[in-house]
Image (tube, rainbow, N blue to C red; front, side, top):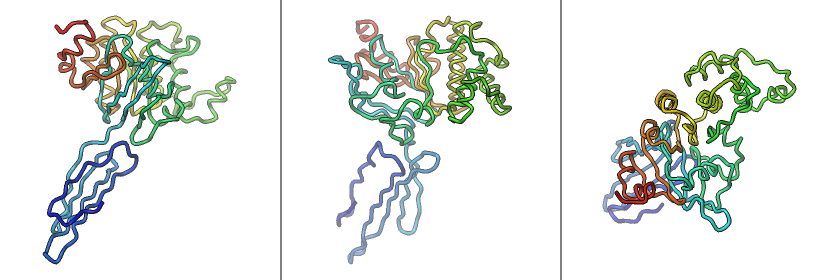
Length: 319
């Protein structure tokens, strides 16, 4: 960037959506008239925070910048024939942040989830995770980068135990030879794998369930098993798609508490699609509201629920 001889120059913000460190230098060359020399550097620190170093008159000033988002969804659009399910959606999720994605049926929430996770390819726009462009990556590679997911229906295997669910997830994350031996029933869990399973089950509040057959569990317990399986991959971002579906009020409250604990104690980011607004209120830092494929409101839970556009989307009225 070249700066002319004027005493001040407007510094535009660095472009978004770039991977790797952002580095910018501004040089004010010293002229015969005695003008000073200044350099401005923008570098992304290992902790993910962009720091601005200003060198002026022999002084180094380190000014922290805003955190770099963990997930960045930019202008994502998805159509099915002539129907636009998701239209030009843009938002971010920060590291360790919990965000609710809410809206009436048919708003495009699950379709957007599928675009983020790789089950669907968007027609336009892009998705980045921690600066890595996810476009074109299959689902399993996105999972290994740290994207976890649970589904509207509890996706479990009735013939397996709770512990076996988690061991398979652990081995799939590493992609080692144990996974092939599992198909031939020739691979016993290692002590390290057993410890890892015990840790995750303790984390979600069901310690000691390793040997329980999944076929003996109720829906609420199966939801916790599915959550534990997702956590076995050690995700940095968990996408939970209507996790309270089919649960009673007590189970929903307990699940919301588990998700909050994971966010606060493990630093895991959460993107939650949920129709139960009481769970959303309990589990998220802020909310994004979609209707007919587009974002109509964003802010804290109380802010978006007071938005007239949100009331119209949910109730068909402004009151």
